[in-house]
Image (cartoon, rainbow, N blue to C red; front, top):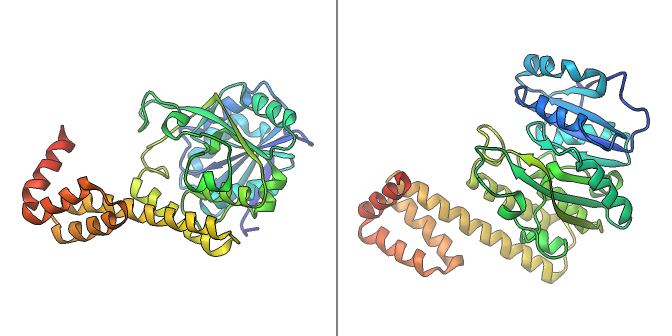
Length: 327
C-alpha cells in the first residue's frame, strides 16, 4: 500500500456492508455531488461508499463539495497514483464482499445496485456483471447508449474481450471482490484503459463475466481533461495492454496468434490516424510513411488510392480533407 494515505470513516458508514462502492476522485469537485446523490438514492442499502482523493489539485473545492456527505462515506486521501492506484486503494480498504465501481463524474439510476445484486445472487457462478449506460449531454456519442456505441454480443470470454466483441462500462460494473484480488488488482503502471486490462485478467484467471442490457446509469465520454478523450491515446493504450498480456500470460498458440493480430490491427489504425494528423500539418513524408505501414495490414483499396493521392497531389488531398473537417 502506498505511503501518505489518510482514511476517515463517517459515523453513518455501516460496519459490515455487503457492497463497497469504489469512487476515485480527481478534478471532479463540480461533479462529484451528483454522483454521490445517485449513490444515496439507491434502493439497495447495504453498502459503503469509499471516495479516494487521488492527490487531486482541486482538493479544497473537492472537500467542500464532500462536506454534506462526510457522515456517509469513507474518505481516503493519497498521493496521485492515477485511476488504477485510486481503485486499488479503495479495494484494499473495502469491507464488502462485492465491489461496485462508479467514477466520480458519472451517475447511477436508483435501481442500479438492486438490479446488479439480484443478478449476482440469482447467478452464483458469475463473478462480475455489467449493465448498459446512457451518456450525459455533450458526449461524443449523442443519442446512443454505451452498448449501442460499444456493443456486447455473445458470451464474455478472454478472446471476446481481446477483439472487443464484449465491452464493459466500469461505472455500471459490480464484481465479487475475491475475483479482482485473484486477478491481481488494477495495473498501476497503465495511464488509461486499466479496466480493459483488468477484465482481460479476470477472464484469463477463470472469472465468469456476464452482462445485461438494462440502462442503469449515465457516463461522460469526451469530457475535457478526462481519460479517453483522444482516439490515438486509446488505441495506443489498447496495443500496450495487449502487448503486456501477450508477454506475461500463458496463452495457447491460437489465443497468442489472436492477440498478436489484434496488436497489429491497433498499430495499423494508430498509423492511419497519425497519417491524418501529419497530412493536416502538411508533413507529407510522414503521412506517406504512416499510411504505408497502416495499409500493409489493412490492405484497403481506399487507403491505396489515398496513398496515390499523397504521392501525386498531396496539397490538393490536404485541402479536401480540411474542407471536409470544417463542413
